[in-house]
Length: 489
Image 1 (cartoon, helix red, strand yellow):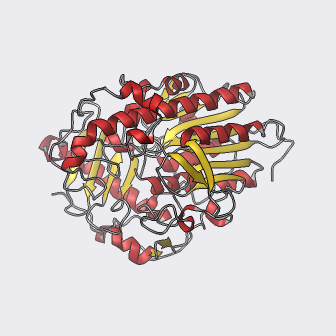
Image 2 (cartoon, one colour; image 1 turned 120 degrees about the vertical axis):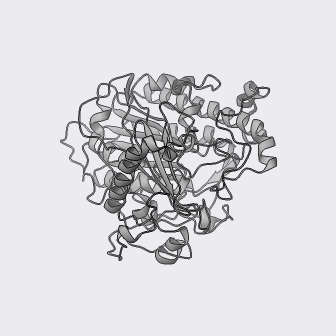
Image 3 (tube, rainbow, N blue to C red; image 1 turned 90 degrees about the vertical axis):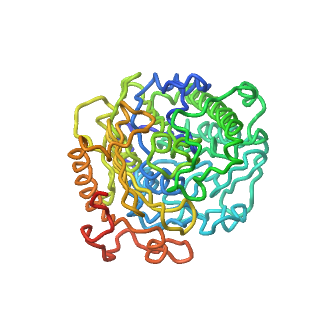
């Protein structure tokens, strides 16, 4: 329980978008976007400019965020699985230490069915263990991306209508909840999970006033756009001829959604200021993963390229974090939980696999991971083999290997930011390639990741898309030397 004699416990506001890539923020150099609130916020705290989505997919990201573990430990290897609730999660730690919590928006850790998202059996997360410790205010749904006139659930399957544009109304809900926290002795933690700028990117799915500035804008194809598809892409990542014809309109709506998000972040920050809560509150703005938009012949996410894995991660805490500072540490999704808990002086659960990088937020020296470890464990939301990969990303290089044919890729994303030159095929990089092979082998051994196919997890971890493996199970693991990792081409 909370020690009321403790002089200070900071509040936490964690705002995360869905499919907002780092490259589409103004502070990151995009002159086409409209993000004045995000850009201003970036100047008020620390910008983790190399923040990484360690498994760039909606449900796996959320599982890693709340557990501090990798997908090979959570079992959330694709979307539309039901999370095993046996982990000691971020929400548990917050409540055990006296925090009032609120969770508003998309959850995506409950449904165990592909499709049929609006059925309450898939959209309503009942009170109890499957809320992973978020036992306070709950105004959420599992998964949908219809943004006008939608709904949410409280503590019953009844749909609560949400009239208007969903991010606008969710922000209003968050501000109303914050209003009720001013007079309580307990600290609070608010998680606001927006569904935008995730597709569908149709002009009817974004407010007209946000779409209007982009209506006639001509977006150039990315420098690494490929007219042919990536053979490793799954059915969600493939681009059809019709998709390519719609790419311009998709991008316009995406940027309109980003502009709307920016406005709502500004409203939330203004409310914190008016409520005199800014000084005592750690505020995070980030995203679960990015979007390819034709880069490397792909759409969507679930791949190791920069457009998919690199996300904004901005942290403000007045008087504690130097304003306008930049950290180039490769902050990975599992690192978020231990880093925040350390900053809040709360206990980090023993099973956490991420690294406490709080010293980077304070701009202090300290140990950093040599590289971020990334996992791609299958098809986006179906049990289909052939799309698995593993990767490492440090401040200069990205190394990746596919499971299906052991193809390797090595990019210098400092000199080649669009990752168009594969150095793995060049003799002068043979030593560096070996370095990354060794590092990847070591990281996988540490995580017990044996580089299995997607259907292996279906057959060994789940029953009817419900994850049955316990977080503390001593389930037999393969020896990595016998796993199906390539030993070069």
